[in-house]
Length: 158
Image 1: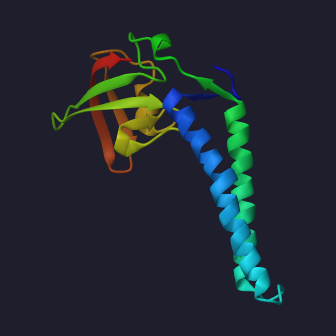
Image 2: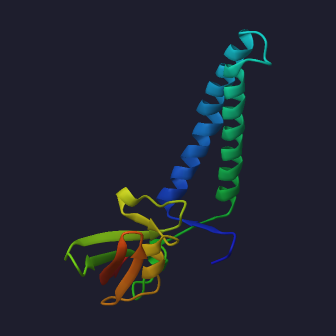
Image 3: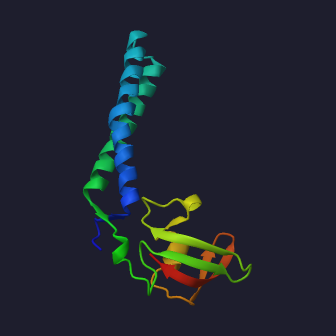
């Protein structure tokens, strides 16, 4: 894995492309309308609406540049290439909390694709980092602000 490469699932890649398209079309139009309206109000030196629209425009253009850069470096993860003997990027990991017997499943993804509510955790997170390269039946201890979590790996799938 190269340092500058951004690893995403096909779904994550499509989501970034949709966000870019939205910003380049809909959002730019909205900002242009807001700027035109603010200009119509007169003096631009003390025009809070104009300043707000210009700030929003700068933020939007920065985000567009970041997304274009990221998309230019994307490597799409093929689930067929994800090994299941150890936890790697793209793996689905079933866990049991040793203390509570609660079971749950996470998919390890890049930080760009992380969505805790959808069960997608970043490799850069404490849990993701602790699970990396572990095997079925391994027990991992993870330091988090609330204390130490202990999980047993039940299965690793694609």
